[in-house]
Image (cartoon, rainbow, N blue to C red):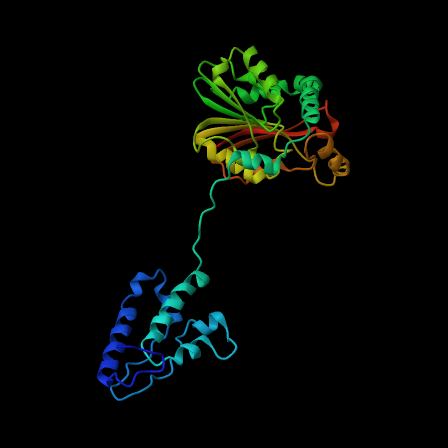
Length: 342
């Protein structure tokens, strides 16, 4: 027995009614199969049951809350409902249900979690490889040119790292650089250190600094990477250390989120950062004027960041924050340091 959208004279009224009722019941009672029942019912309006003597069905009336026409708008030659209404057999309801089911994804798209970004991909995205001579020169300059700064900041580092019990702990140092911080904690028994830095030429310097503290070479790992995608598993680190690193990251808030991600519950984030001078001060004016040049000559370092505010708003369970001004580096003299707990 064949069917067409223009009807079939051989089909008796009772048979047409029976087919119609079966089709209607099939799609009427299959609502639980759809994720959004109320939305689905708003999209499809089934007509009343046709009597045995009727040759056409009443015009479908859309329910309050939306319709196919409301979602798609009128089309040339008539609306979707009008186009479907031309069909006088049960296929109209099959088409209507199928169309509405497909439209659910347009009206209520699924929320898909973004997959984690590979650390190597993020490295190339936010810190593309510089010329080798530049990165090597920068590493050498840091190793040779930070002596006066390290001498002045030493007392603050001693105070900071005295709050870290490193024995047997897994520690990640972000922006490990030439390794000036390793002497403050890497001599602890059983400590394992992962040094992260985008500059490949920092590895030799940081390994030498780790060796000088007595840290076994097997307990020190250097990873090329950036703070926006730390090369570490969730809740894998007892502490994360970062000094003079937030000034040069692309997105401070993303980096702080990554720090929280890799920290174990109760893990510590130890930091020392230079920050912007107070608003309206002459130093802030100078920092703003020199900021573009600083970014160019100092591998992306910004002079005007308010890192303390970012850390305060990062959602750590506790935070100890201190401010200090150093005399050895006028342009970056305002500093903050402290400890945050996950």
